[in-house]
Length: 210
Length: 380
Image (cartoon, rainbow over all chains, first blue to last red; front, side, top):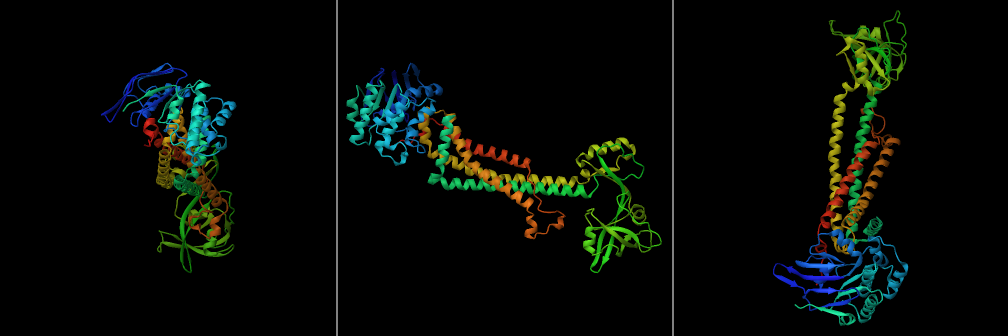
């Protein structure tokens, strides 16, 4: 599913983060742990093709990338790649229902009402479907972002601190859904987190050191 | 396409609820509207003025003039409506407040019937409407005019005139119309043949036909377009200059669109990053932003062109000038000189659309050239 080989990322020509090689198989649920500044978010950005690695290769769904030059291939891969990072916002002009269904429009995929109903039911989004992002709490936003990241039933879900700023109730709700995705829908999940609840739910840990 | 039209509709409808963009967008809509309105109205007035002057020339003056006195063969030329021999000169009419320069025109042919002049010192004549208006002279009244007479001691001679009636032939100065033979004896001018055409705009072709038929005419024949070419060239130059200078107004308005597009994209740059992360193509996002801003500018364009169209129709049809009491008789033009011109409307529309598209396209491409990572503002 995903292999990283000798990848590193240089900052300001002086600092460099070197990542251990890693292979993630289909159906895994892996947590990326490490102290602040250890490169968790950078790792998430690299494997979700938001940043380019200085050295090394990333192999995903059988395609190997060392540079992000093949934009059209990366774009087509995004259909199978659900990204829920602090960098991906909800679109302010769209209500929550429209935000969640946006990837379906982008990738011209037919809407499955049954899956959508199940998704909003499990993530408790029914009451806020017609609200706009500006009127939502952090928990509601995070759950909406997760719903949007998985609406296309991606093979791989990459999430960066999905439970940041959430209360315990919202954290449990979100983690339960991640477990459901992994166990029932067989979605491979990679999560960068500080949260023990999330890391305890995962099946494997990839630890980064500063 | 569904994604593009969906997001464009959403961005467009949410634009007026964006507090920081609402006022600048309103200002740019108004400025586009005003500049398009100004450019269109000015061009329509210029066109109207040109057409009215042209019509005036075509209705009052011959379309072709031939100064050769030899017998001419003008038959068989299809564009010739009528032709007649005439003679023109100038004289003066003296009234209580001074003297009035008048035109004396001798007409041949069957158009006007003159009485036979027997045992009378009066010369029978018709007068133009403005002659009657200026002098207050009516039918059957008599008066005197003075014409140049270089061969006499006084260099001037007095002529007695008796009015037979008024003629509807418009002239640029008050005119009296005499029988051709009589006029030829009284005034010192060369006679000429005045030709009226069915299609005055084909005067050049008709002139060539006349020359082909009458070899001796070269240099002695002239058409209305040649006579008035300086006037029309000046009017054309004036129209182009005004058009160019007023086009800058649209250019200035487009800078406000450029600035708004820039602000809008800057505000939404993280949303752009999100759309790219979700798999949207840069080309599609570019189209969304260009279309959103284009539609906003289109409101300004529509408002400006509709007001210009409505103003043109009101000024053209309602004879507003009379209502306002503005006197345009000095120019000899009835009503306000304004005409809706499809040509100028289309030209201004195309020019405006090109500028609007550029003003929205350039800032959008600038942002979309960046990498996703450069569009993201990281917190913490």
